[in-house]
Amino acid sequence: MSFADDVRDLYQEVILDHGRRPRHGKRLAAYDVTAKGDNPMCGDRVEVWVRFASDGAIAETGFEARGCAISVASADLMAETVQGRGKADTKALFEAFRTMARTGVCPDHDAGLDEPLERLAPLSGVHEYPSRVKCATLPWHALDAALEGTREASSE
Amino acid sequence: MNVDKIRQDFPILSQTIRGKPLVFLDSAASAQKPRVVIDAMRDAMETQYANVHRGLHWMSERTTEAYEACRDAAAALMNAESREEIVFTGNITGSLNLVAHSYGRGVMKPGQAVVISAMEHHSNIVPWQMLRDSHGIELRVAPITDAGELDMIAFEALLADGKVGLVSITHMSNVLGTCTPAARIAALSHAYGAKVMFDGAQAIVHRAVDVRAMDADFYAWTGHKLYGPTGIGVLYAKRELLEQMPPFMGGGEMISSVTYEKTTWARVPHKFEAGTPAILEGIGLKAAIDYVRAIGYDAMAEHEAALTEHALARLGRIEGIRIFGQAQDRGGVVSFALDKAHAHDVATLLDRQGIAVRAGHHCAEPLMRRLGVDSTARASFGIYTTHAEIDALADTMTRVREFFA
Image (spheres, rainbow over the protein chains, first blue to last red):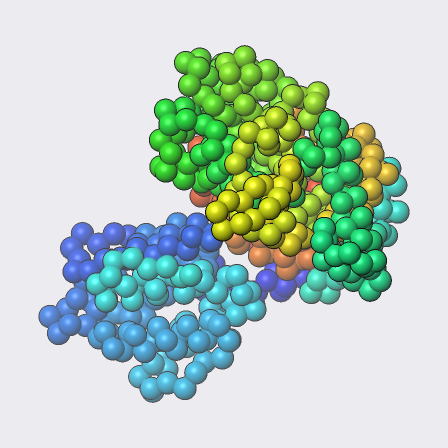
């Protein structure tokens, strides 16, 4: 197997692309809630800002991340997939994604989450690297903290 | 030194990882164990195991003898004046906390200061912060130069007011590989009335440590980095200091006599060794010390210097790699960062090729800030490391960079 084949299970093109050029990697000028996520073991940090639409759904998510390609790509794909979703829907997506990152298997879920879970699926390769699962879930912990109004999250 | 022969002493090195030969470049975090260490611990469990220092039976006497032989071996390894100057702890963190508690709270006075350096492991930072906050001790940090060496002029300036009671500095940085001039540090500290402690976690793996020649007051190291087991740390302290210091933890093994009104302490070093010690680990460490001494520090230091030079040359030629630390005197660890990828991604890609390095802040966050990075990757070498393994690291790093380009 070539070098690239050896690592493609984790570093798929979509992850490299979002890791290198995140579309949502910026602080929002106007936002409703924000929170920081910290992984004290490895030093990764992410900060998210969320703006809600008038119906309470997420209108936009921005983030600043200090970490690896996995955590940046995960934050960016998260920002993409939660857009337009309400709080309960976002939490359900987080739960399903967390299971996928830990086990590599997509759990049973509502049909409405088919499309976002498919877009997040490239990140499921982290389940083979236990120390890297937190890289993928850290942005979601931060988003969850922002939605809950707790301001700080840890992936510990 | 015959590295091929040494490699045969380490059973784990024949493992394959993801179908590729293991290239273990993480010895600075914890070293692999030679067969003699594994056998010593297994033999003790199979043939002569009991608790130590108390049983009046054959098994206990034999086990006590085997365990206490480690104290003699450690004293000889460091050229301590006597075996009573060797205290066994759990690890270096345990040793530093013992000194921070027993010497810091027990002997130092509020208003005095402790000096550390800007390239310390968290274990040589946090106990002094706790001492500062509980006992009114000032904490001073001696800066390093851009090359990653201790700034000796600034260091002396921190001692100048005579308030410093203790200097606690690494003997070799786990991130930069810098070896600090222990004898000069000790002489300066003593000239200004301070005691001096060295964190020898890395140094004792790469060079002979002579506590009397360097005139250290305290010197801490740990078994598992010197090819021995985890769970046993060695603290050297001058006898007069141990006599002066109150115990750290109370309990069995550390007493002379106990009544409800008053307890008297055991003699040093047992005063500092409460509870059942790490018996098997002591027996294993004795075997590790014997193993290292049979190879000899001259041969080990020569081998690791050649490896380090080779690694600096090979990695230094790769575009986009930044190597941290250019100290004149350095040991076998090389920290580096890649312009296009985070250290964790680098470590994962190396791991896919069977190459184990550490990545992260290396328990030295303040040093990371000084270097202006969040994390680095670190390759570290042991007696079993080969030039071919360093070539494998360098070749793979070239491909990692292409992958992330």
